[in-house]
Image (cartoon, rainbow, N blue to C red):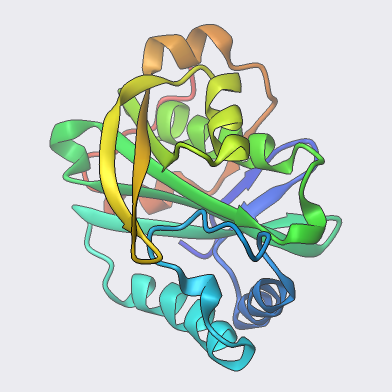
Length: 212
């Protein structure tokens, strides 16, 4: 899995080395979002700096350690010009049966507002649909998370319901979104290259390579 690469014109997505994971932790400490806003259900960015860096490292390593073919999470680091700028997740549960995957991401605050969020989401959509043969992609965001919802709208997701959630001890509304394979196929334009996927397929239960 560490040889898998997903590349766009500006970005490379890959599982991180320990050194790149350390870069990601430092990026989180430097800031992910404004202090008066919380985009995550689990408010992990509220942790003090020394704890925050440790949590980033622990989360990525724990996900790798608990990998199962029918319940997997690929937590890529996103690299631009040799520098880690954020992380993009793609995950699948019972993928062989459901043929759907979820995504999640964050960028270091210094790298906001330059289109990276859209480009890295488009990269894993290509991986999920063209590479793994999925039928649906899922996403969710709080109703006041305009950047995330904007990326989803730009990429063709449709409304798929709401969820009542607790955020920082208060009620909040989450928006669920769904993108069908046919809609993605009709609208995707970004050039994406996937390298070394075939040898990874046994670890992604039910996945079949389809680069059409």
